[in-house]
Amino acid sequence: MPGNEAPKQPQSIIVQAEEKMSLFKTVPPNVVQSIRAFRVSDLQAEAARLGQHFLYVHCAEATTKQQVLACIAQAFHFPKYFGKNFDALADCLTDLTYKAGPQPGFIVVLEQLPNTPKCDKEAREILLDVFRDSADFWAEKKVAFRVFYSFQ
Image (tube, rainbow, N blue to C red; front, side, top):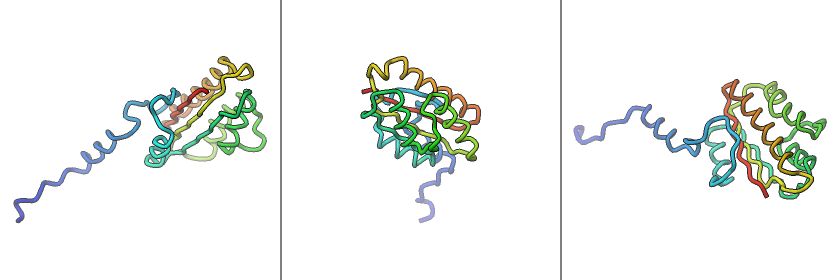
């Protein structure tokens, strides 16, 4: 009977409900933070759902800053001329990628960053600062750039 049908909800309410279910409802769009309770598979699925780039690197085998940068370069498909230093990393995460055209957003996972004498706390903080600067760069372009990391 025509009178027994449930009223249709406006499209905007459905869209709002989907947004509330987002894995990132409490995560700013441009942030560098510990992976904490997030699972890599959930982050990858959320990247796919949002149509964003998912960049993942597992650094458990790296013991030096240069090895960490080499792992990142290989995993993120940086050009062969990548200089394996923090300035080159910053250039690849910002200028080179920006020149490639419009970007849908990024979810980056840096898993098992080393805690060794050749990659000490200072080197890890500089590395994360490069990613923080990249997040700021992309924020100015109104592009999400979320980075999640863990240490060994």
